[in-house]
Image (cartoon, rainbow, N blue to C red):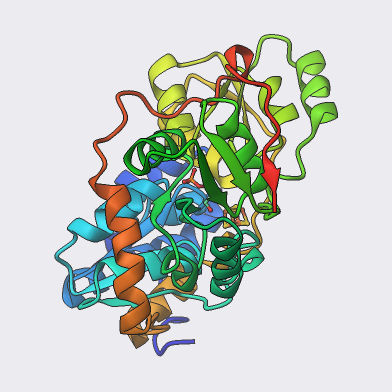
Length: 361
Ligand code: 13P
Ligand code: SF4
């Protein structure tokens, strides 16, 4: 624990400084929790200014992080764009390791810190650079589109990256550019299956899974429909297709956020990681959130305490070998340079154009 950390008090000055944040999160944080969190939030926000640092916070961070210390918040695509634009000296990634690597790849001259090096991802660990090289040998001439939830080593073997917000757009763009009718889309099997139903491009997929989203199934959806007949159900495209088929809407975490903020449903279910609903709920006081959700153990490794320690002690620095970073950057930059889609990707399986089988490697 950093010096002075345990001595932080909930003083009147801290209370006044953090009041706007409290007003935002008070439906999701108890007053007792706030007394411990507010001094840390104040200290982190002061340290950020002193050190010219920014915090990129993913939608799956808990509300006191997301609303309290995040300078830029959003989905994987949004955070990658912000990293590329940032002129801060230090980026603290309040998210998982592959996101910090992406920031480092895009900002090689900045110090990128992750508060806990163990914040991994089941998708990122499902595939290695050597696996991608073998796939390319097996399918010569086909472009490789890789989900950003991968290591820099995997991105270095990739032609273009994608996120759940733009996967259909990227696949169609790459097929057009390369003049091919099939694309390799790895490593998330379910994302690949859900994309395949939205495009004429053939998809070759890998058997990676997100351990949070793969656990939702058709029975969960039927139970929810029966128990909450008026609720609008939004699901993330890392979920199995049978889940998306029974959802009202599917999209990235940013697309789900926009759906709730813009359409103001009376009652909503977010089929995704638990903190997502908490964060949106702080901005959507008139919507009731039904709460079946799964926790991501990797995202939950990040806390106010370790963010403070990261900033105070400049740890843990994320580095990527220059040669790997250079090749990975091309793949991420090609994605960022694509024009933003006219609408956020919507995996509208009710109107799915295709009932296709992807080729699973
Ligand atoms: P998005 O925020 O890009 O939708 O990704 C969700 C996710 O699982 C990130 O780890
Ligand atoms: Fe990886 Fe899933 Fe956790 Fe995102 S939610 S970090 S995809 S395991």
